[in-house]
Image (cartoon, rainbow, N blue to C red; front, side, top):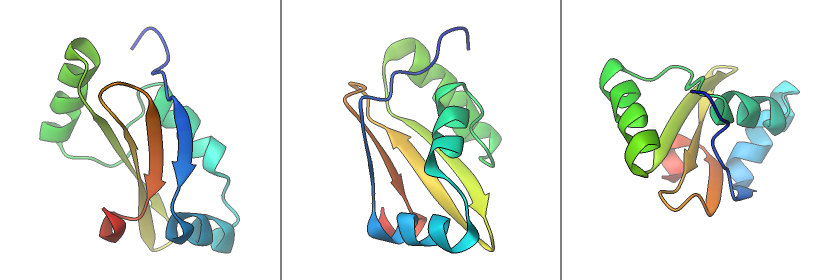
Amino acid sequence: MTAPLPLGRVVATPGALKLLMEVGAHPFDYLARHATGDWGQICAFDRRQNQIALRDGYRVLSSYPVGRECVWIITEADRSITTILLPEEY
């Protein structure tokens, strides 16, 4: 990816913030990875979908391990909002 992904307004669920706080992680570290095309631990299909999303303007998903759990980051298709959440909160 050549240009950073526009994130729009960034929000996070209470569950995701709690997890990040418990392990001493900062949400900005994960947002930076997401915005620069490091999608974390997603399958090959989702990686291809993200590439299509960047080209055609669809939703972008990243997944990052945090302790024994993980957080997802989703940027909506119109790039107006990016949400940090736990998978079970989807």
